Amino acid sequence: MRIEYDVKLDFKDVLIRPKRSVLKTRSEVSLQREFTFKHTQTTWTGVPIIAANMDHTGTFAMALALSQHGLMTALDKFLTQEDWENFAKEHQAALPSCFISCGISDAELEKLSNIMKKVPVSFICLDVANGYTERFVSFLEHLREIYPKTVIMAGNVVTGEMVEELILSGADIVKIGIGPGSVCTTREKTGVGYPQLSAIIECADAAHGLGGQVCADGGCTTPGDVAKAFAAGADFVMLGGMFAGHDECLGEIVEEKGKKYKRFYGMSSSEAMQRHHGSMADYRASEGRSVNVPYKGPVKNTVLDILGGIRSTCTYVGAHRLKELSKRTTFIRVARQLNEVFVPYDVNK
Image (cartoon, rainbow, N blue to C red; front, side, top):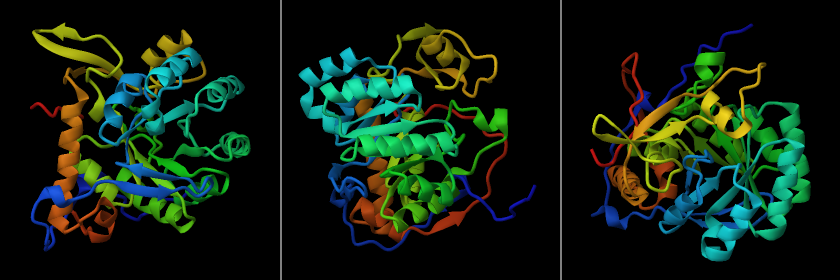
């Protein structure tokens, strides 16, 4: 056993210091990024925000809505081959903004292979809660051999040395975050985790040294948090809770005491296990919570609010492009309140 005494920071532990700027208006800020990926050498251009591959947010309706703004969606892994084929027939133009998600079982690999034979998806999200296992690394290496021209995002991890191993094993993008999600209880159930801002800073440094990218996954509850993630060095930011509760999300609208809600739960929660696997295995514990989030209408309003917030951040530090934000950022540590409770972000407040 050993203890690290270095201070590690989360989004709420810092603010971004303003700097002199020559920008006259937020409209001068470009949020588009262009990336050439390490293993495929293919290029992608767009706004590097991704809807999380949870069954609530990783829907085809979400992919259609976000693609209109240049954003991406990681589709949930429980969608069928028929679902993918129907979507591809009707919405071919949206496919370049989609990730197909996969776990590390043989059955999931077979399902992925069957879909990829029929649908030309350019991005794979290889997603597990614990990206530190030998099995995960071996699966990633095998996946890279099978799909040498497909961009692979793999995770989740939170340390620089594991980011390097995943990139060298075939990942183009490494997903960063263990426990920060709004409906994730991994830190409570296991005691494992890493403050998300420091994780992004350290992992981005490791990835960029090898020509890879990182995706900050979890912990953002406001547009300011998304801006801080990019400022810390994230190339992509994945959002679950902030995109929850919209028309494009899975689930019916329910009413309680005159207010409208939608159901939102973590993918390791007992509710998710019951829905997709029929039961929770005896050897594991639920590592997610279930909540009713306020119904928010079309996701477009939230997208515009998030993008507007990031543009405003850029004007405060003089960054003409999103790419410049991390280079222009100085973080200031602030006192943090204890016992804070997550409140789902609602652009309509």
